[in-house]
Image (cartoon, rainbow, N blue to C red; front, side, top):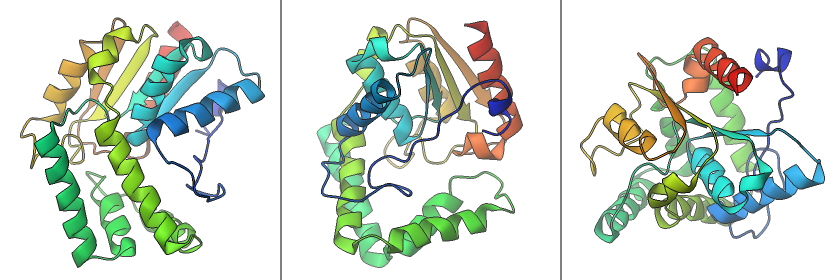
Length: 238
């Protein structure tokens, strides 16, 4: 973000119950998060907004674009959730797998593994980031944290956007790492990230897809310079 701030006004948002934002008994649905971002845009009277979303944030960004198309000018989706489709059997399998992981591992270990598995080559500075996430997690009520996590997973499964992608008219930049091990879930969908991304990108009326070699799920961290250049050129062009 520091590099992009030389060219644009950049605002990073902690979603409710995440990061340093307040925790409460929110619904934690993706539509709820989209509504919160929309309210933020209106409250700050932001104009010419290019909404950037990573992973679950990408699916939230697409939901906002569908609900409030007038609020933004463009979309930037970094390894977004929402391109992968799940039938009812696959949803149950996904939830069962997550439940099994919770049974054999605590929240701290699950969080640590999830972050580490999101990289193709683990950066040197990732451990302090993990410790910060764990510290934030421990400040929350354990039951509320688990409910939030489960609700977010359910949101990605139960609030699909794939069939509605042709309705998103905004210029859209899609960025994926070729070595993404998180999307798709290859245990359920044995296809490559490129195959999934290309199929979804074709459904947008105006989308640009960039695949980054030797890069995992955290594209904006692992290949920051490449991603920053893609975003800068995309926004300046439009």
